[in-house]
Structures are given as structure tokens and as C-alpha cells.
Image (cartoon, rainbow, N blue to C red):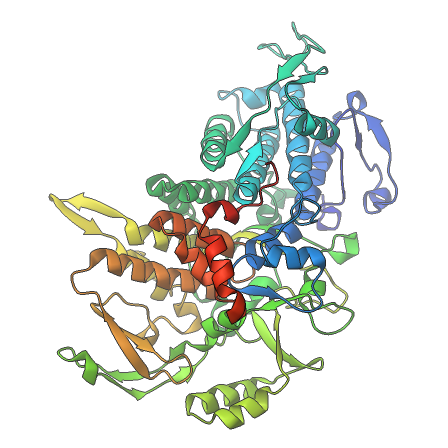
Length: 618
């Protein structure tokens, strides 16, 4: 199967009948559909694989919802006057059940499709449930479907707080919707009870069963589906490289590393740092000769933006692929771009821009260890996390004309040196746009990829774990904060081999050393975000928990710079708030993006954790 046929199905109802496109021409044309009865399908390997591609098409349809709910409710993204009414509802935390981004239907469709495909594999290829049988491609398909279903449940429960358990006998969206709407017990009249020794022996057909409606909260979803992955999955991801010589296929389908990323993310959400770390470390310490998923200089400095204009197995773990030529598009450019045919509905917040522009490299600071009040900045340094910020994550535009790099740096230097008037003159009538989904795309592309997991995100998850990971050695508590700092700054958390260069998440964009590096100190200086002058300091001497929280804050700031607008920000804030048992952590950060006259209202609303979820099933 070649790249051009990837995800060629736009929607496949995997129930009593499905869509299957037989010829190459029809396979690429979503308008031509042929319904084939299920008993006439699944006659050879290619039919199985085609149906699996249809399930990936269902995942494609979720990406806009995932990004909007993961970012617009956070502190890095806000609406413009062009925003739709549904976006305004999301932004204001006043979400109706008719909101297009609030609907769980996309998740239900994917879960139902997974249920059906898993059922068919267990029926027609019973070796997939035999742990002793040799691994083959059907096992890989089975693993993909199990992971996809777990991912759908996990993302749904993060959004809704609780989700109905969709029984495995429910295999069409019509059945699912009838089950959801039923007032009490739902009777499934087409349930098939498979015999233990295979589909054709002693199998009972059409056995009616009563399905009690159950709702799973976050812990139950995580417990259920981590156990299911551990106990059912023998292998994940069909190896297409051997037939198409395209290694990027591996990271655009569910694979072993993506499975570990999902497992680690679920355990981290639950607060199980030991289990989470075991899965993240499998990714970070993988045996690849190319040190895959380590942070080297492959995407260093100006190459950082290449993460978003291509798919590369050195950084991408699991990315949902789009291609205009195959009618596979999304609305990201329309949401974000302020030029061409687009609507400019969403933009970065002021505070998100400040995250990049308040970073200084090359500063010289004369530190007085004995009297912090006498510490002074000798040279403020050069402002801006330039390579990850301007032109990569965001951009300044005035009347469809972007600011030049030279004008941008002039503006920052003038502002640093106190010439606010000249700085403001450069920025007059400028607005900001999100750039991550425009890199390498023409104005009519509308086919930016959407990354679910990538290397730096996993590395920063692990830094978060190291911040709180304390172990006993010789009866003494030992911390792993140096490993967290290595991930952030220079890659020193790894044991370096000859010829191998590790640079750290900040190091690969020139911020991992000197005054730009993140450090854990007793005295932590506060700096003016524009001039880098010292404005005060905090004294954490003897305050171990204070130092942990300070480092965690730095990691969350780093996640904002590295991963902004990729769909995880609101859940990052939720996770830290729950770990600290402090809802004000999330409430304060989200409220800060609102106008002054609304901040208290939003802050007080978000102090109630129930308001972090869309209460769709109340």
C-alpha cells in the first residue's frame, strides 16, 4: 500500500455493512461508495488493512475538537472577533450540548468501529487472542485497534469527566446512540457469543443480552484500558516499510512507541509515576542505533520548525497524517491564518507570546551569594526564544504583511533598552497568528499534520516525573532533579557514548547553558520580562517542596514554549493542579488571559474542579 492511499476512507460504519472501495481510482474518491455485506468482506489481508485505514480516518475527524478543547480552555489561545459561536462558548466555559466541539459522537463512532473490528479479528483470526501463537500482521492490526480504542476513551474522559462504557457488542453508531439514550437497561439483540475454541464451533448467534448503562470516571478508564493493553496486545503496528520503503508510515499508525506513550500518559494522569516512567523510559532508552527520540541537534536552532513541515521518525512518535491530494484536510489554517481565504478565528494570547519573548540568552549576571540584594545584571543578553517562537509557533502580521526578522529583533532590543516609543512604532497595528500549522503549507493546503506524541513532549513528561521522584539509597532519600535538569538543558541525563551528542530540549535551541539554563537554587531571581533587570527574588533555602514546585513551574513553562497549540495545555494545567491539590493553579493561569473585568469571575468559576469538564452526560 503506497502513501497516496493512506487514510483514503473518510468514514466507515463498521456494522452490518461497511464502505469498501475496490479499485485504486475509487479508493481515492470518497464520492464513490460500494456497500458490501460483512460476510462477503474480510476475504484477504488487504481488506482488513483497508478497514483499519477507515478507522484512522475517524481519528482524523477528531483532531479539530482535540485541539480546540485542549488549547482554547487553557492559557495560550484565545478567540478573535471572527470566532464562531461555538468557539466563544468554549472560550467562556459556557458550553451547550449543541456545541460542535462538545459532541462525543466522534469518539463514539471510533469506539464502535474499534469494537467491531476487534470482534471481527477475534472471530476470523482467533490466534490474536492466543498469547502462545506466533505474532503475525493480524496481531499488529489487533494491537492498533486496542490502542485506538483506549486512546478514544482516555481523551473522552479527560473532556467529559466521565464517559459511558460502550459494550463490545455495540458495533455501530446507531446502536451506541440508542444505548446512550436508553433510560435504563438496553437490550442488544444481535449479540454473538463466541465459543472458546473458535468462531465456527459451538458459537451462539443472536443471543439477547441486557446491558446496564455504566459510566467510567478517569481512574476506571485508565485502570480498564491499561490492563487491556497489557493483557491483550502482543504487537502493535503493521510494518509497511518492507513493501513501500517509507519509514514515516510507522509513526502515522499506532506502534510500540505510541502505545508506551499512551500508557505513560495515562499513568501520569493518574499519578502513578513509577508505572508512567517505565513506559516513557522505553521510548527514551530505545535500542535504536540512531538514538531515536533522544534530543540531539537534528532539529536544532532554525531546523526546529521542520518538526511541523514533515514527518520524521527522530522526533515523531505518533502523528495523524493529512494530505490535500487525497481529500484529507482539516481547518487549522482557516482557524489561525490572517491571510488568503482564511477566517482568523483564534490567536495566541499575550501571555503565550511573552513566554517566548521574556527569555534571554547570553546574559551576564554578577551574583552576590552573601547579599542577593546586591546581585546585578551586567549585560541583559539577547531577548527571545527565537527559534521556537517567532516564525515557528507564532508570527506578527499587519494587513496580511508579516514583520521581518530584522524588524522583530529591532523591536525586542529597543524594548529591552527602554525605548518603548520606537518599539511600539514598529508594532503598531500588528496582530499575532499561530504558525505551527502553516509551516510548509500553501494558503489552500488545509492539510497540516497533527502530532499526538513526539520526543520532546515525552522527555518533558519524564522531567516532570524526575522532579517528584525520590528513592532511598543507603537509607537516605535521593532525588532525581539533576536528571530533570539534564532533560531541560543539555542532555546530561544520558550516559554519553562516543560520537553521540545530547543537547536537551532547551539546548537544541541555544538556551541550555549559562544564565539561560534552568537551575535549582536557594535564591531565585525575578526578572523584568522586557529588560531582564532583576526585580526581586525568592529564597527557597531549606524549602524542598518549594524547590520542587519551582522546578515544576519551569517545566510547565517549557512545555508551553515547546508544545504550544498542540492540544495538551489544558490537561497539563489540570494534572499539576490535581498533583498539588490546588485548583487555583489552573484557575489563575486560565483567568489571566481574560480582560481585567472578567478575571475574578473566571478564576472563581474554575476553582470548582467540576467546571473543568464538559458535563455532557448529566
